[in-house]
Image 1 (cartoon, rainbow, N blue to C red):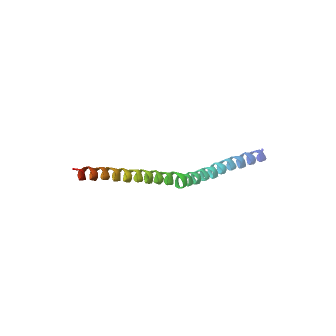
Image 2: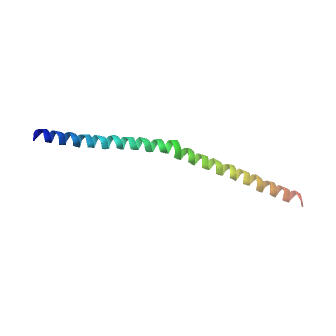
Image 3: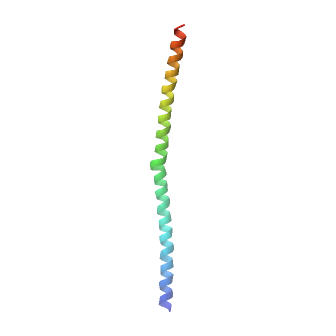
Length: 71
């Protein structure tokens, strides 16, 4: 009887510790994912949109200058 209770207690302890260890591992993986993929992807998207905006501004400025000089 005592051995059976000791085995059940040890099993419950191991399950709890495994859950804790996997939770910590999951948090570390989530942080790595955010800093490794999400933030660089966000900055790359913003940089791409900024370049497109600068090109659009230059095109509009050039058309405005050519339009005013042709009068």
